[in-house]
Length: 299
Ligand SMILES: [Zn+2]
Image 1 (cartoon, rainbow, N blue to C red):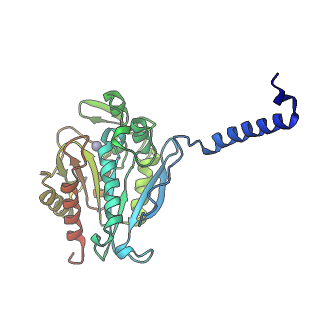
Image 2: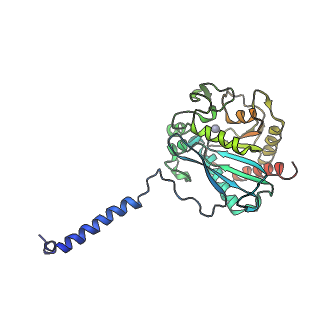
């Protein structure tokens, strides 16, 4: 035996160092499920509006006019990314880019509007594709088409944009496929979170980012398209260059979020990016500014 180990003091010291090392490993280790600390310069009021089926937070980022911390921010405009999860991960990155933009240029928000971004309405679906909670990089995104398709749904394998209360049916369609729409309207915690958020905040308009149909769609339920929905569809379309389409008729959709909003008289549009892997920043910034202009002071 090495002479050093004959002295108990050295054995104790070595064991203490090893013990401290093991303790530090477990304290410093960050499991992937733990939410990383986000941009500390964020000017938004960040709130947890609900949890996903697997217990991941759904966050809203609210920008009040002129950076005021509280108070009456006038009309509320809501943007939602990622309801189709990792399958449409670019809509989540676009949302985060918008958050970074407002952090850098808070004066770009008109004085009488509150702008709220829900960057990731389906965090389980995004996690399935990126293995990240919160922000992720393009390099984190799976290249497997099978995994990307799975990431469209929440952890209960439900298409959240078929789980809202407008012509809801237990199964619905996505292209030529049959998808689960949940056990009833709002059976899924993610769609329920959006519902509760909308009912609490009563926004003037809600814009959903999807991909990749290259269009801006209006919305309707039983009562047809709201006139204001057509106005903001045209505004976003004209500014962004995405073609305006009044009604989606490629295949039958039931239980979509935009239809439910139409049913409660809230204008809603669907903005479909052109591809699954670009954020098309300048087009969407122009679209957002057109929405601001529509709802700012004049209207
Ligand atoms: Zn979609």
